[in-house]
Image (cartoon, rainbow, N blue to C red; front, top):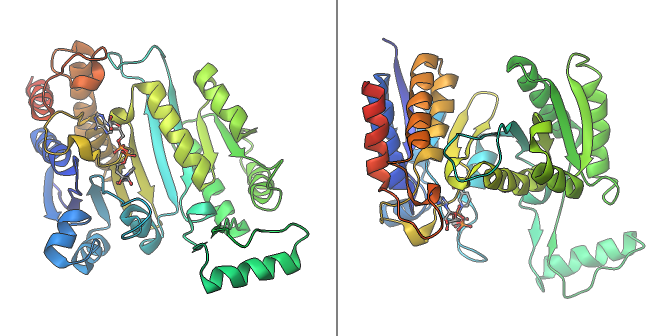
Length: 359
Ligand code: NAD
């Protein structure tokens, strides 16, 4: 049996609990994985004095595959997002998030099965920001006020939204290739081109051009606000949705809500060589160490990882076991229950999945 060496980052907050349960579930499929466990986030600061140590970066570089738990980003101060840093260091330009309704999940929607492909490198998340009052900020405001008909106030902070032809082409080709490779029928490009003509407009122009190279895949576009409403009203109509960074982030959480919550939404960040698999949700600090959160998103991320490393049978068995536990409903966490009702613990749900795998 092939042995895989994979970097595992438990992360912080609820990360260590859900990655531990996930590791046990993967172990129970019999797949042969040697985990290289590495720190990032709060435990890394405690151990190495920095949130993203070079040991962790080297391990991902070596193994090319990483299963990652959530990592806290302090709001407004402290270090910048480790999640964004990892995407930028390894050029993980495409984030893929599948959203599927598992019967038993706390949702009234049925038959949703859609994919959000989010551009990961550009847009307002590029990290080109200027703090209010700083000399460089005043300089850039001055320069823009000289060049533009519009005026930016002196007491502004400035975040830059770059969207390039090259990166938009890359994400569009990725979305169409993904659709082709996964037997999907339609790609929908999301934008706000009516307002931001030179960034979202460019994204849309590229989308339309790339779409002509894929006549076998249906193509359409939607303005982001309309898309948000359409997703709530008729999500079944959508298949592969491709978005610039910010809209992809927001619509992902909206879709997570449709399928029963963040606890059921996994994601992958792909570069040309490296892939990092993670849940869509964050580190939920208020639940850290309480052993009550839903491990499913982390397990679903691991299932995507198993498919990626061609351990398809193990992936299918694990998905089957997880969906049976969700449908059965006796061994699920609080977020599957009616408001205010308690669920089983994170580890108990994991044990139920392992029992299903054994049957
Ligand atoms: P969050 O996703 O951590 O939690 C929001 C709420 O969603 C929680 O309070 C909880 O009610 C619910 N939730 C999340 N995961 C759950 C699970 N597995 N089971 C059951 N319920 C769950 O979002 P937040 O509170 O905005 O962010 C907390 C921290 O996580 C922040 O520092 C943020 O920057 C970070 N974050 C990290 C990632 C990542 O590592 N990729 C992603 C998003 C946010």
